[in-house]
Image (cartoon, rainbow, N blue to C red):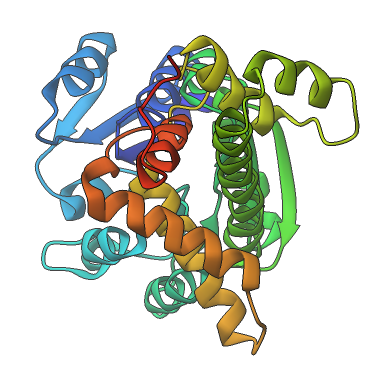
Length: 301
């Protein structure tokens, strides 16, 4: 029964708030770790969530803790740091890392938990905060099938699809490949749009023609919605996060001895965007970054 599984949640931001909200609405006992952004914390408390003061306290009061954090360094701090989750790990406890993370870090964290008898699943997400609020995310899961089945009722509370990808770390690896493809397509589309604009092409016509052919994609449409209509809402993902994810991807490939010509190019572009003050802006605004790099105005006249 859902009521029998106590869930702790760390990272109730754009994605995490909707996930935790759906867990509460589906009958789970949910505890959350507070953070500086109090609005989502207070909203979830009003819905019935408890608040704990430390990761250790959260783990002590939970059967499983779900993480939805910005990067692997923060994950390691929350799990392995002082007063961290590891200090309360025990047989039967499950850590679910829904962050977009470095698989090598994921395996280090899991090994530390396994030494205390606890289990780990990597369970990154696809879709957007809109689907998180609606409870219709896709969840990619790496780890033992039996542990996945134990957590499946929780996943079903906020996901439309749950995919068992394979062994521990495989879901984080697949998520990085997915994000490499999406962020590279976004970068290519931004470059193409600004080049077309500089060549005197109506960007609405660029969108019309590509939309009718094989080059069309969901990411193309999200970037062109900003380039043509000024609407960036379809891709609420910061360029700093894109840089992080593509960086993890290139590191993962390098660990296997693989070249990453396109990943490296995308990484440099997102790094440049971040170093010139655009890191907090969402990826569709890469169109403006490309315009600035080319000495053009941010928007077409």
